[in-house]
Length: 172
Length: 267
Image: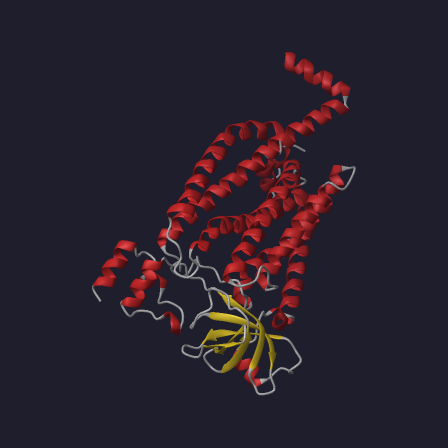
């Protein structure tokens, strides 16, 4: 075996070894790498009330209540993953992207009464990028209500121009 | 060890080696580089200006993000180049470790700083977008953390390849580091699928229709192409300078060779 060939196999062996070591480590720590827990996980195994956890899911349509206690705004809303819902209480200003039907990540802990007290709420943006006119046209034509989740199949709208969307808006 | 010797031995490494070694001759690379440079630089400038101009001023605002979506036209090309630049570094490392390719060593020296710069821009623009959209500058999710690790890998490579008095030892050590760090590339790519993250999944996939309006996709594609050619143009320019620098250094360090080169030039 020539020296170059030996070096090539040595490099391949190192890459395979290192790759499998990394893969095993990552799959072992997989649950720790998750950024957030889903509401059904929180319901099934409620974390201790003194533990800080992150709860992620979609804001349930019609569940948002905004109150003012003196100067601080208090927001109460439900977060769901489709299987279970957890009520979140958050004192403070919500990010701009927060709305019903949006995915959010709430950082905080479980209260003894089974609700979630958040110290921070982050809005999660999904992978859709849509001009305003197209979003309005889809909503007007009844194909999509952002309050109830993600938009329809991208192939049905990603080629729409603002001219198309105006026409779609008029012919509803 | 020159190309002719290698092509005479028809083994796998020999044949592949002959192909790789064709441009190991620095003189041959310089001639090719001189011809390539304008074909990289000018299209890069034009495409970047068209892509960014279209993206920043003429493409529509997003229905939720408003004008903040325009950060994407810089962030996505930089993120793509951060990963592909590192992939180029991994390829150079294999060429260096297995075939002792001299040009691959010089290329690894020059790719590092450019890659670190685009990774820094990717992290900074992502953070600027994250504050108004997510409500935080930074979150320790799998995507953001793995890109930060990539940034540190670049910095480590830059430092290590220049850390030895004997450049050959630096090339060897840095190649091993770059190769080991290659594990981070699939983690970056698939982090948004394997784990739940705050970072959104890919909008452009091989299997489905892009979940992005074509009015935003076109400027993004042009800008990405422009940035990529720009990256290549900067690396080739730095590499040409690097090859000339190493020639000059060789000439200065050996007076006899300098005399030979001078007579050769005169002849």
